[in-house]
Length: 385
Picture (cartoon, rainbow, N blue to C red):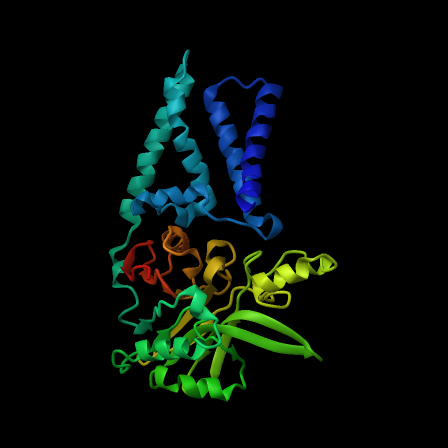
């Protein structure tokens, strides 16, 4: 049903385009291409924002076929690159249409030149310093526990899943490590700032003088029998919860059901319970948050947490008044089995690094965990499963 609804955006593009071509009697091919590309851009922006937005697999991501070709997104963003991709994709029409004229061919040559300008901009804008990454400032350990989704929330498996994370963390000495990074909801128990038992259980997974970042559920009681639940990332030190971040952009029908409170009179309550595991789903966080990390080298670094799906919302990941040193992205792509989603999600994630010129650390449950440089280059990664 969701792909069927998404198809309506493309149908609308074509319908409005056709109406305008007829209404204004536009005959020149280059004008048609520009008009169509403008509508493509408008509807990608609409699709990315309407009804909470769904900016998945935008056309601009095709430039990742070559990392040099994607670098201009640091100037124009993914939407600008979508507009450019639409123009370039339609360039052959300018040369092979019957009864072609000089203006069409001239515009086609201009677009081809622009294609190469874009490529060489990428070649010369990639700074070799990017390859030095963060290793001289901070030492981080990413943990990919590879727990099947069918086992992740089983009561009889929760402790073993938790134990596996601790054992993997300690599979190499923790000495010299500034922080350990687990994936989204790696801790299968509710965490709050007063939950000393969780902190105690984590003690062997936290480096001395360092931190552990992990996804978990956060719960607050709002009244008698009334609770709010967040999908969160916590920062632990050896003694307590130092900070946390609540996921801002939730997955419709995965973490909450849109308009649930207005439709509760229907049978939808039973459906919601099955989808979100009970209740009305997760609550929405406050948005981009910068967290300070004090390291053993005495460098105070700042990072922005990103949880799973929200990494695809390019305009929401950074507070423009507080630019971090890097991103930490926690996710769980095990829902999609051995198919292409983890690779696609990683590509979309890498695009955020190019747009912001910031490195990114990505820890996932079943893969793909990775270190992404500011130019989008994935220097280290673990395969899926």
